[in-house]
Amino acid sequence: MEQLVKHITSEEFSYDQCGPVASHLSEILQQQFEGKIFPMDPTPESIEDSIGKPLFVAFRALVEMADSEPHRGQLLQLLAELYALQPRVGYYLLYFMNADRQVRFYQRLLKVHLLKMSCFLFKGEKRSQQSQSKYLQRSM
Image (cartoon, rainbow, N blue to C red; front, side, top):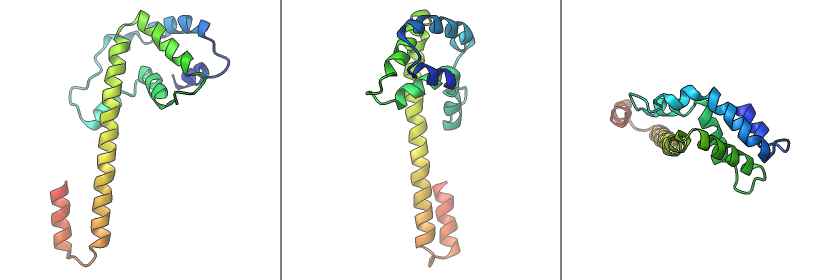
């Protein structure tokens, strides 16, 4: 799917090709549209895994593209054509936007936690081993 998105955003892809490509994608991704995407046990890892499916690659590329990119319109047109064939695309886009935000939040939270922990450990070299282990137990 990543290669397809690259091709769609290239100069060789035209708006006229969006309909037929969306039709083929609708058939290829049929199982994705029929299954459930929300994980049974929602953890940051399982949510991230749930948005790793091929359809979400197109959403991620769209989110990462600048508004001013000249070929962004082709990807939007393809997704609009796919939405006409598979209305669940709209719900999947909303799910992606929410899940992607949660994943990024947990990644930032983890980075902040690691930074605090490393600052504490490096700055607090004078502290005893006992106080460091108490901090580590509390923070986890």
